Length: 115
Image 1 (cartoon, rainbow, N blue to C red):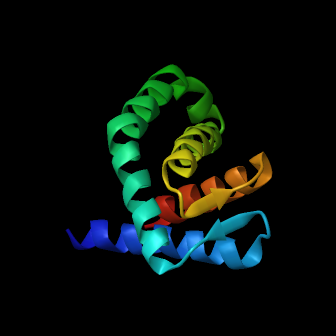
Image 2 (spheres, rainbow, N blue to C red; image 1 turned 90 degrees about the vertical axis):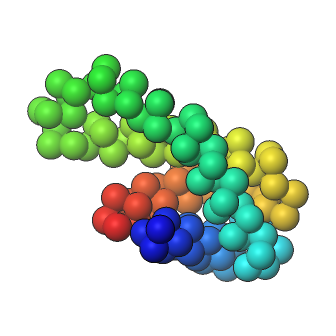
């Protein structure tokens, strides 16, 4: 349970850092960041892990040859799609443009991979 709360807080923190660092990202406040992190987590549980599993099944050999780089790239692509869906669902979160989506998704994928 503690691991879940840490990941939730880290994701909300990534949203807030992105909102201050990138002009194309707008988050109304910490409440909106935690709400967006919650929605992203639920979407990730419902859609993300089956997509990750399928990508791992299909890309296991390239992932083996690249020492996990293909797996990281697949994770970033899947998280970008899920983040775009979360952006559409949360009114208080606004991410304009693909570079911001990919940047936030990369940050989330790397941080969650380290935790």
